[in-house]
Image (cartoon, rainbow, N blue to C red):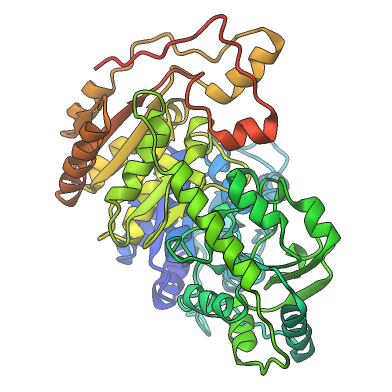
Length: 565
């Protein structure tokens, strides 16, 4: 017998090995406190935005569902940015909050909010527990929906008058492992037949492939069998080693011209575990429409969503790839021309794009320096502003042994700061490098306090371009500038040093390498480091942005960023 629903939930979570709970303190007598007393791993922040972002980062890296404890009204609303991003990025989070008691609904009770309606557009499932008999079922149902199909956040609300009821010991535990979905045998045959007939096959791996340990090597084995060129979406990056001769980095907005040309020459496209969002389709959707596209995903709602694929396969991507490898392919295929083309493109990319002058292209040079200094299991946490889009392009940054952590299609400012802490908690032995714009850093820098209090070492590389570069780029088309420029003197050196961290402002590539080396050593000691990368906002604009959006920068009134060390 449990004296409260919070004791029941803490027991169920612990026994089911769902150990991670993230929160900002709320009313002081809820699930957060019960989870702490039950010896669950509880992590708190001083801002709900940071706490929810930490939950997102942990779940993204670990692949495990986590709990985010919210509080009613403003507490819930303040964390919604990270919930929105988690929904977009398919991250399994169970959000649990108390709410107005049942007899007071509609009376203007303290912090009353129709939160179920509020959460409908940004969570997979929303439920208010109206009777104590529903308590156990509701948490089990929430877990099931969070991890199955297209993973994502779910929301439970517990009325205040249900909190202190008596609850029986649960009859069973939570099922946190997703149900396995096997593809139809006939669809495997059709896919193999298409591969045999194809002259220029292309594989695309998305974020849904990240947590199948054998998927990356198996996909490369399949690519080698059929001589397929391999691309990833932004969230799928890190699944395959980009040094492999068949791997060409990200598709869509982030593909450099040579890689995009190769992609457009494909005559068969097989997409694994991706929703094929807008940015992923940029620059080749018309080609996909003209040729055979096979789309594989474990969630039926991700299929036939943004494109009219020729074959839709519902199934776990790891099982599909294994089935394709084992299937007896009849016929012969020799793709010497396609292999030669891949080799030529690989050489062109390496020769043209792996050298950057730090004085002219500091952001591009910084990403290349990270590639040169990367160690096994490093995690690069990325923002999605303007200059930092360089890092999404192979071979500006080459992912060979770790992974990148990126936002979903919402690309909310500030979220990477908290997400990076969650990533570190998920992989304590990894070095976490967060590459972020100054605007996003300013919105999320409360995460510095949380990292310091947790005693975890973090490295932040901040692009100091004097403000919000993406809207400033668009405003210049109208010959206007408003709200984009930072006019204050940043006190980043003092802020990081007040937390016993280190500040670096390199002016050349050697200084940057030394700064990363020093920051890495400090990270292993649980210390924070901030590395400032200074650039004029009009310089070093990613080539892919110029390509896709036809950017022409007006140089009549140059805006110089300033570094205040």
